[in-house]
Amino acid sequence: HSHHQVRIYFLYTLLVLIDLGDNENEPFVLRRGLYKQQIERYVNAFGWDNVLVIGFGELKNNHESVIKKCHQFLGGEYESSESDEKAPEIKNKRSYPSRISEEDANLLAEFYEKPNSELFDYLGFKPEW
Image (cartoon, rainbow, N blue to C red; front, side, top):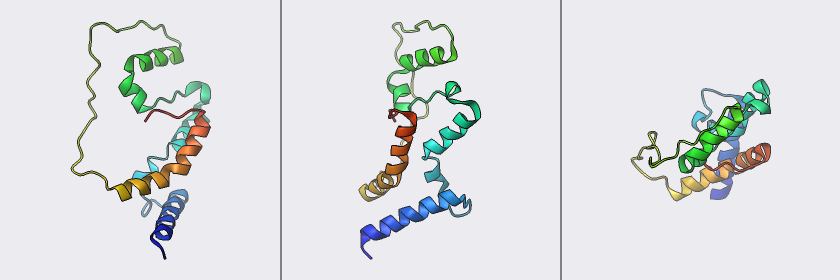
């Protein structure tokens, strides 16, 4: 088998294990990146009118806009807190002991390509990661 066929088989196997809910063998770390399924549970439980989806990049890069959006979503009054203050420090930032290989990055991009496309269609926009 070619290297590409092995990768496709590997991706297919991961998706099958995730779909089956095989908790012993399925790669839960990868499942956590399947956001559509997670968001659907909230939408099904609470309805779209009660769910606000915000990308981490938007929060990181434009925190004041996100705060305003949250106030509006919740129906509260918004008063800008912008002053001479600098942006809040990002607390969940960490360094990684090693960088992901290009091959692994490509494998993950391939793995998430279809689920992310489905997520963007479901949301009607592409969140800023």
